[in-house]
Image (cartoon, rainbow, N blue to C red; front, top):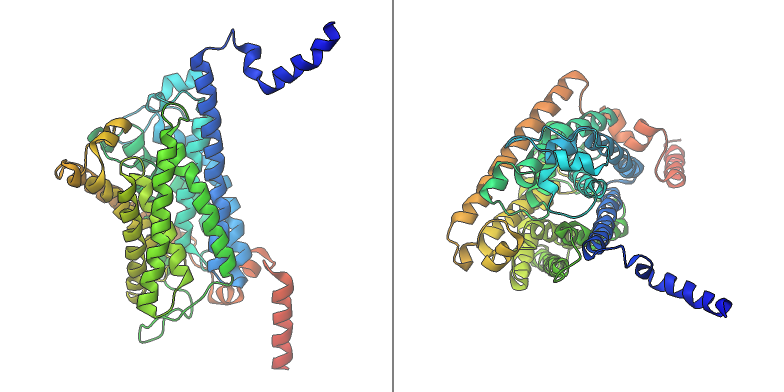
Length: 462
């Protein structure tokens, strides 16, 4: 008789594993387990954004630099992971003062250390190790954005030095101000998933690099007019943007740190998706009106700009407002990218327009569109101007944007200028013309194609 019960029992345990420990487990433990799995999945999605950035940047730059541009994404995330574990996480989220954390360095992953050092993260019922991985993913994204201003002309050692210092003295400080219990947190600044903390910081560092490195060879003529330097693979760029769009659900919806209750993470995903769609459509239409042709890179930048903007606002605004924020992001980014180029800035992937200007707009937008109900639900700040909150929240948002921008601008300039004086920022003219794949790594990202082109060139010269 007992043999007949073995198979059904095994099936029940496999299908309903909770039954095996139902007597011991509490509702709180089950909730913590579900939330932990959700945040871990979100962390993986945000880390996978590195793949999106690798494809986006490689596709947007020239073939002779494709291997370098994609490969340094892996290198710099590795640097960020080690440094953020050792120092950055404690500075960002450790207990300390209004400006930086002073505890929690060299994270050991134990809940004892979490209780003693990370009170700013205590509200979420998930292990400190998962909280760390989730926040590391955000730091890695901010650093990846910064590299846009270095593209196609920076020395490889610069990535090591600036990557370490950005992860210690720049990113975690502003993160502490807003998310770690710092002074902007006390004021009620609304930046749900990081339009300012992640995107504006990375974009500001990219802007400083763009200025100090100066334009790529051949970008501008003597009269100041700009030449197009198209990327080598538009399909790679499209694929990169699609990956980023998908992974952004981990970025924004994952920032709820919970899959329980009324499913608020789904609402955040809804506003995120609506904004991205509106940004892409609006940017394509405005480029069509401006150029007379529908520009695909403009559409892709519109999607990304909208995602950047809604990152701050996704938990505070209604769906219709998300569409407005996204559409305006796509339009603003299109025009600012044109203006910056006319002013002599060579930003190869438009990092400051897409992540900086859109980050500023997105952060300010909550001061306009945040509803009192959602602000109360999240527990941060007040209603925006259009919902009866007056200018208070808009003022807090503006102060946060200005403070973060000024801090990152000054620190990035000091660090990069010192690097420039000591070892130099830019490769030689010969190395830039040859391409960073060969000059920095000794091989091409597309070896067969580049070898064929070199042989054909020799034949023509002969």
